Image 1 (spheres, one colour):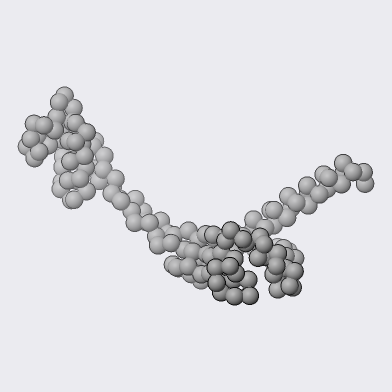
Image 2 (cartoon, rainbow, N blue to C red):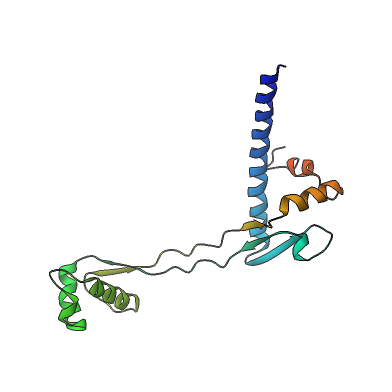
Length: 163
């Protein structure tokens, strides 16, 4: 194998490793989501539980709370209501920005306004994420050097029935 083929082979190995690590990472995040519905879990290098030994933390935030979305469907129907409710200052030829804001706030508060629709999107669950410490590479390397971690075991994990 010549030098150029060796470089290309190394790139193939690196790409295959990145793909395997991405799959393992997705699997681990799914396991995190299955075990941790909400909260934070910290990981340490085994030498202590202070900030200097922290590898990072995984967190699952609370689900996002859906907010109402207000759309003014027929301004010509809304204008008489807005003038009666808020006075002539809410309109020119069209609703002013303040008029639109007042109408949207009233609609969010539950007021039925002709020509206005309020919808609430579906609640989205919290998404698991891992936040590494600033020294994660150094700490993990130390764990590998001490024999606590072996990168090969991560790469050998079965993924969805595959090896």
